[in-house]
Image 1 (cartoon, rainbow, N blue to C red):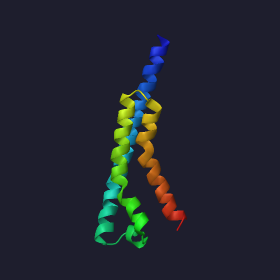
Image 2: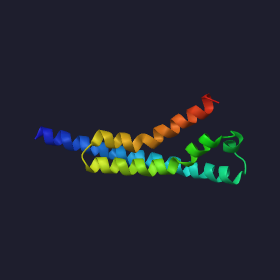
Image 3: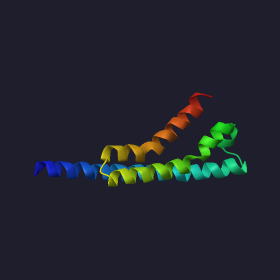
Image 4: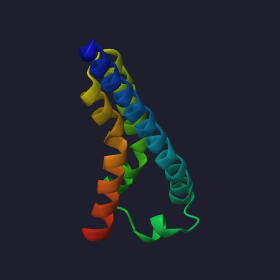
Length: 108
């Protein structure tokens, strides 16, 4: 009986992890959209002042694809009962956005 409770608790916590990672990825996507509009229209903002090259611009504009694919992978892995991998896959856009921001700030 205890093993069943531990398994259901682990699964529930993984579900919360996937849900919160999805909320975080979609929250970043909201601010990404604001920056993308500024970047594509050239109407100012820090994103235009950074002078992103071709690679930086491509990496910036690919975020929605990464967010949707990783969230779908996280949900699929959760349904396949791979809880730890599901949380990691769903949290990938958040980690990627943080690393991309650090790279833009510190490697320029």
